[in-house]
Image (cartoon, rainbow, N blue to C red; front, side):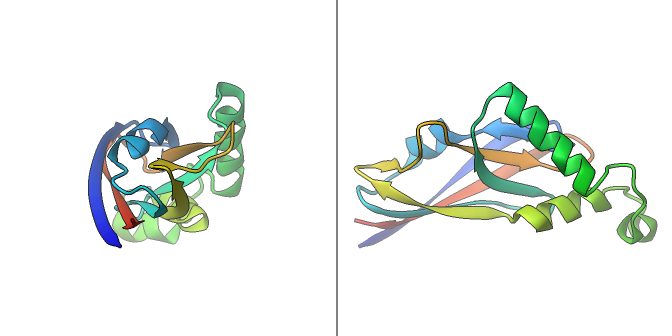
Length: 136
């Protein structure tokens, strides 16, 4: 049994920018079988899975806007003056990471399922994603 961690970095656009990171995650898998936890570092971004195609990504971003509109005033924005309360809400609703199985050195995903980083902040960011593997 081994535990291995790898860091990935991404430049994002903010406002729930969705980036397919599936191939990057698979490229750092250092176990044959086990589990992998993929987590973004920070309180205004999320990791999830989706069918990464333009129409669904647009639908996804539209739904996030309905749930926590970027122009809706928040107490966080009033307190800190950074107007990104919506990004914290979106990230909290989605969560910072996911855990997936690894089999034969690859993350087990469905045919149309990709791992995505979603940056909800209100500005471009440098994002770190930590990939922690446990297995053999």
